[in-house]
Image (cartoon, rainbow over the protein chains, first blue to last red):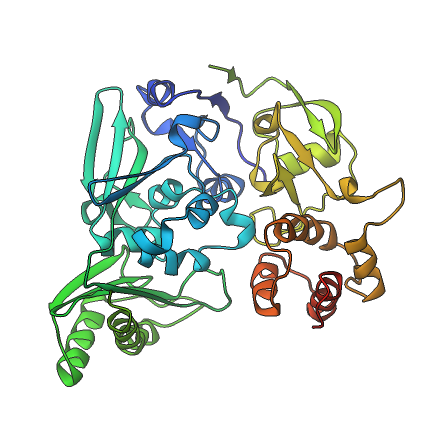
Length: 275
Length: 163
């Protein structure tokens, strides 16, 4: 349970970090909080030859609000976002999801962008980002580009980020007037990986539902306001479209059932707290 | 920009429990192994080595951290606190530790240093947690002896509440 040898670079700025990535191909990895990457290193599931530590870059440790968007920098820890005084008012969905992310002891080091970059299909933050229609800011020596969350995560632990790019920030759209948000998760114990996680946004005439843990990436579907049987039918169709997989924790069938049952619950939850 | 090569043991200087400390580590050396094998600390317990069990939990610049998910070279220039920092005097116990002893909040003691370090940070932020909040926080540590009942009792008594 020890990592393979690697060279270690302590980047002092985002410019230095992307300069180190440039030309390294898939041999270099960005280290932020390390809560997802270091277990993979310890298991030797990944064996990069260079680790570029960005955890000490103060310029990337920020939460900024502009133009209806909250932007979170690459070295900002999950606990920092949790304690941000705007979290409940501006990002009610993320506020509801944060307590489900790992544990108090992991949020104190784990970063918001690191979770998005890691792209576990059952992770809460990529699910929130996709459900809210957010963006990922990618940076390389050539400059910056923004990718919509739905185009960022392409599958299990895989993203459209190029090897020479780092996740520099993520951008969460601020909750809109008239919308309500709710988050529900089923896990074996609090803090475990979600078997199924659901995020909902609801207005008077629209419903948006994001589901994590069933397909290989967070899946989001939007409907006009549906009631009763029509909502059940829509959730059933969504559950079948997601497919799902069997593992030691749950069968695909059980996962689909959770989408139907908890989908209704989380949508009702979002409707009940519309602003 | 500091670049440390894989084949070399690099000097790591930091503050350990309030005192200057120094050792040498290859980049891949985990902070948990560094504290135990290089510096001889007996309180940092290595359990799962992938961040789940919480036995190796220490504080780095005050932030609760899994030592098994931190590299030794990352703490250069930082402050690291382990459970030894809690004793008011050599061999003594602080009030939280005394409450653990009184309430049998441990049996084998393997998980205890990590739990105490988490609790110390947590109680600084939340001096009067409810039992549900406390149990939620304790979910970041595995204890296979106590069933958590006496740990909860010890903390609740410490903060002046009954469990």
